[in-house]
Length: 589
Image 1 (cartoon, rainbow, N blue to C red):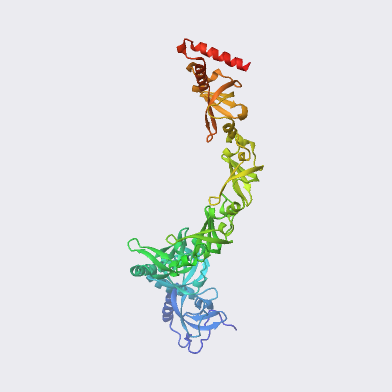
Image 2 (cartoon, rainbow, N blue to C red):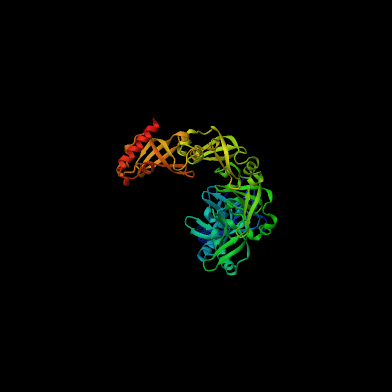
């Protein structure tokens, strides 16, 4: 028959045995009661405590352990395994276990190796917590908000924020390997332990920082890790202290943003450029560890050299072209095209495009190279000057009309300008320009060519003879002419000259309208009325003819006085003038 579960199995050789009393040596009633009281009293006090036991056997996945009670207890084999390692046990080994109950319903002692280890660990951990000492543990699991850590039998919680000083994306390399921790919180009643790996690292960083700052000096080369990236640079962790790596000190070439070449967590070698011991501010540089590409630039890139480069950046004022790593030049918008004016550089070139450029100037003090793209092709203004002469005529399309003139398209995809003063001889520029439209073809005469300033002056009115010349040919200063009043103004009257200067305008000032002041009134004249006046001035520069009725009357009086005598002869001024008028009428008849 199978023996009861509450009975002990035959102990293997070498193992401790419990002797069952026989009738011959059975104790007396009083002794038995005392022994029973001693056994059960002692056993009862062991519940909830750690006791020593001996491994009786290892069967399947369980370990059978004798702890000195009337029956053995079973513990799963996995409870004896260390994290990530197989258990190493053999029959006869002495182990410490936790006695939960004397018997379960099967009559076996309820034992636990994990609880025994936990009790042992709690005692050790409590001492470490009280003294703020570091403990060693193994991260073995992931839970919500953090990770689980085995502290030699006791399980602790490691919050995600306490894993490292910097956020860690992948914790896999830390799992399964012993790590130092600081106990932040312990609650034995609830079985809660909270640990921090970050606190341990910060302590070591503080020590390293003190040592680093004490030995830090300018020019020193250090290894660090990129901690943070901003628009103006990157902060590098030097092992307890941070330094600023400005964007201009990352590389010799142009960098728009530090993220183009750096990543958070990237190890970098840097040089200490400046160090302020009072504020403990550290300025770092990476490009200083490389040779300066600007050395010998003047000899390598002489003015006038034509070469190819790559467009690295485009701005409103031009485009930057890389000639070699670390050497860039600026093509100003004015040097990009001979003909495309007031156009954004992005419409002429594109980023990463390979372009041909010419070196225009080098400023070593400011480390600037001025480049040109348009200089790689023929200057259309110079070509136009070589193929055309001043005074020649040609036709073109009106490309634009502005408040000061017309822009006319010329051969070579360039424009010439007809100033508003060169549109018409007889009309003001503001009036003459209204007769033209954009896209209209017009014939023009070349007035001037300035290839250096990229200006070509054109004229339309110069295609015909200057009507003002007829004034100087048919009339001269002092001539009496017949005019027609064309406009009446406050300061005088505008007139149109007749005869050979028909249609040409003149002006008679208010003070020249009559000899008598009372007659010097513009409103006594009417538009269309004909008047005789004397030309007092012809100004070719301003193209103005000035006339005077007063001067004509004065001349007539002088002439009459000369022909008919003077008032000293006894004749009155009226008689003299009357005689002159009669004589003039006879001549007309």
